[in-house]
Length: 183
Image (cartoon, rainbow, N blue to C red; front, side, top):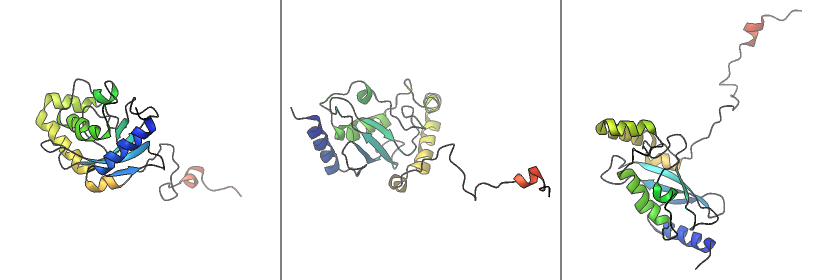
């Protein structure tokens, strides 16, 4: 049996030689982005997503970590973090699977057959169970707003809530509050 690092390299090369665009993060082969398109015959058709993949040191014995970078409306994807709730990745992963399986089988199946009874996005799950047509319309709206081809090329800016405002964004009115300075 080959070592995990050789298998990681082989699986990544196999993925890069397939129809997927892969952007490696840093110089290692453990973190990368994969450009993924919504499957035909689904409300996600036409959508394009950047998927972050992180391979653990013990890959392929331990599953990869998968997350959507740009927003997607789906019961089994956390809207804020992009984390994916997918049984085959999270619980039943096997070294028989590889990265191409993730992008050619597992993720398309997730988008084609959402599981609203095990949600990470409760709102999407509730809407899907209550009104399938409205759910599919919301999916298409998200695709048009957040999953255009140009959205995949851009890395979203991360802003923290405690980030300082620039002088243009911050209009100080301390003078009005304190009044004129006494001589």
